[in-house]
Length: 383
Image (cartoon, rainbow, N blue to C red):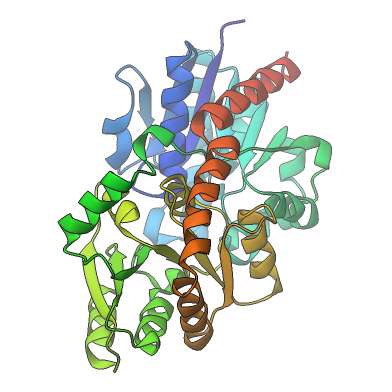
């Protein structure tokens, strides 16, 4: 059977879901499978796709407008476009990633008799209103043949909130390109020198969009409570909160140095230069930044706010003693960071362990070959 996997996503702007689609598509293409993407504008990441992966431009929802009425008015035309595309291009499996663009794709795929997989990208607490309403209807399990979870925690949420059977859930990983990140003393020394860090500096790193959901303010307050002139908090990212966070860092007391790098095209040198990654985002589900950090041999300190986030954090480390957790208060985060810096041997052991963990469980070569098998099973189910 000729295979054609079609990914459906709202757009190809820079983000975790979008990067996953691009990287997975490139892998599938490299193994000889036909793959295409249907996405609205912007197509920021399209230039990273292998040359002959087609991107079909289709605006599937009203974007920032978020009007449900406009969305419903758009729906019939979007479905017709997708039905025509699926039939013309002989699509054999549809993989949807975000709910707003998924809904018309499910209907179109059902009309065409094509099996569907849907990724759960966010935890229930951080899903969109449309997602919560749509899945409360219990219609999606009728239209979706397989659900994709990136952690066991997300698998449990799919069962609890989306009412799907575990037999219809596959668990995989977002995957990380191990070749892009190294655990090497010379690389680390060169990166630290390039950033101007002294040999004894204790470097904490945040890699995140500067948005309230990422709670970078927590990292800044914790770093300043640490009040250590040998400690440096490096913030790699940009976004609507940047001016506010820069003013906060400038006005709060504390001797810890805080540096804003802006968004980095290549975060690998920052991972190599740091001693620990601070993961302060709300709903800390296992994502690209944490995987890249661990692939670089960088231990992670995760902030949690409640029992659900605590379980997510444990899931990140697969229950192993290879990372640190702290309550999401500045005082608790500062205390845990100080504890880690006072145990250099433990941090050094974790560097080797987290690299090995990601290589064995989350490398793209492992995760994407596993996904290729899931697609084969999905296509067989649609025959």
